[in-house]
Image (cartoon, rainbow, N blue to C red; front, side, top):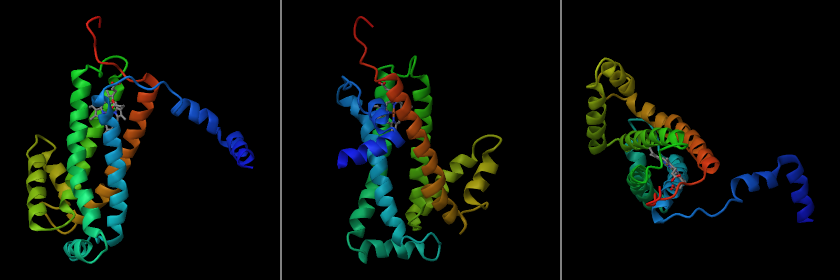
Length: 219
Ligand code: HEM
């Protein structure tokens, strides 16, 4: 019976072709260093899952954000755990993505034909930093407030467009109430969508080109 169901779906969705193209490939001959991309992907998914749970109780308004986070920590079952994983997972993701970049650089895996994989990777690094930065403000307490002030101020210092970008990021010349909903929207929607799209393109290219190997003497 299951075979009939599978055949019915396969004829309509091409499941066998999907399996052959995506998963039925020779096992990559790498070292532990080649697992850092997958570790980044795992952390991205973990952040997504814990983030969804957090949005159930988090309120992105300056009047309620701080209290809603306190409630998650003290009033919600395992709220402290979910928030802790999301908080430390964010830092770990930045570190792992960066070490993954260093590995790719050291093994010169950015060269032909993987230049686009590298360029998309740069986008992934920026998006990872952006999603971490916007998330830092969300608890709406003093520490995170100052971090955002310093971070946005640094962007404002850049030439020509600095002032414009600074105002756009804060929705005002100083850190004001609209900054919080803006950062929240960027955090859970805009940057997340960019990150998901870039990861899809990154993985497509990795499947297309296969993985590089560590250079040997002959190389
Ligand atoms: C969210 C961030 C990222 C995810 C989820 C991700 C995912 C992956 C995965 C699963 C692989 C294949 C296995 C591996 O080599 O570990 C890979 C390879 C690769 N990644 Fe990333 N990556 C990310 C960030 C980056 C960054 C920041 C760069 C560089 C700027 C980059 C450049 C590359 C390149 C060039 C390869 C091919 C390496 C090879 O064939 O040896 N990636 N990535």
